[in-house]
Image (cartoon, rainbow, N blue to C red; front, side, top):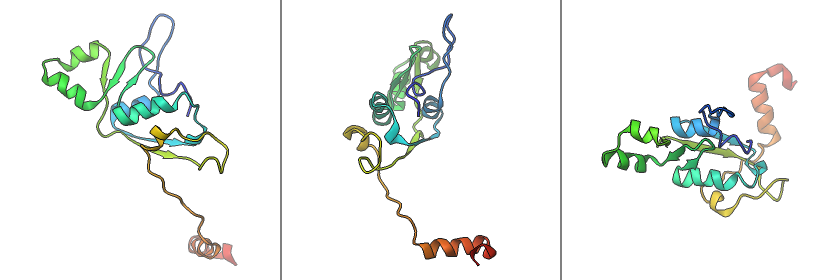
Length: 148
């Protein structure tokens, strides 16, 4: 997870070309975003990610702004058209956007501990190693000669 990947967008200016990266694409198109190694993410990225998870909002470097779907819908019901909102640089976050974060527990392993606001957005599940006998049975089911 690169620090700039969440904040790059897709407009072309005279000096910079912004390209939507996976975080932005997932938020806009309702995809599942898988973040692997979250404990290695830069500290300045964690509040931005937390704001996207909690409020479905993110300011992009090119001036556009991802807006919570309920706020977008309220603006369109109040008389603003989707084209008008888009021309103002507002983008509707998908209500189907989901995040799966994979990481190691810190401080047991090297990395940065997640800040409490971000940690509260995630659920934890510890996956212990299966016993050797179970792994051997699984291997035998795949390739019987390998276990002899």
